[in-house]
Length: 281
Image 1 (cartoon, rainbow, N blue to C red):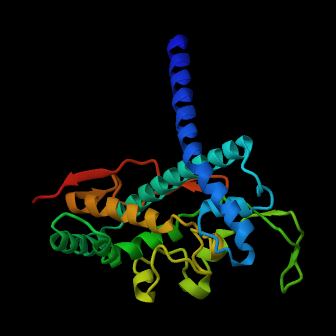
Image 2 (tube, one colour):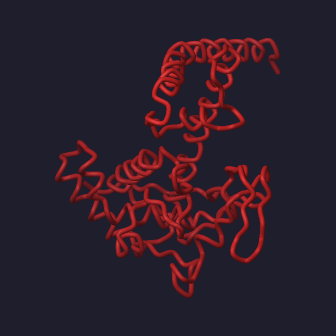
């Protein structure tokens, strides 16, 4: 093993990361300072932007009145972490959706025909309007996200005030809580007597988009703290699947639905291979 080469590569990666963070901080600092100044001047009339920066500024644990170098470094690291996690989770769900599609031959023709029609309409140049027309694919992606099978949402939340439910259970102030997805995504009231079955057109039939949040679909959270990147993430998955479905017959080696990998309460896409066969043009 060439330890000298490894050390050189690590040094280079750290240097690149430091330069990137420095550029990030340079552009972010005036934005943060302007927001703090606007808050001070406008008071209750201040209309906060709905974004991750404002969320961080308003967090009681991380809020500030002065943008110091230490605070700037902290928020840059936080935002960089969010970006990396976003890329990872989108890739995971895109992969999982491919496996869900590959293992269900009864859906292939129907979803493929929609992609062919849209491809002809846009002449291969997708716009947001064309992506919005992928209603069957959107419904399929929504169902793939719903049945991803993680037990809980991996993003923890701190209870800022003590809260008591109707059944008398109380969450004390300061307690860290996580959302139990199984109870939400597999409830019989919304999804019928067999909620674990794959319902590819549930979203289409009920006019629920894959990016829309509600009490029975919590993959992106809910309310004012719902994932702000959910529209972008869903469109990325749809575009990727659209292009692959147009060009390839996608199937699993076994011809069956492959099982996801579970690590404790969290799920990951299957590790079995996928077969991509060129479509005849």
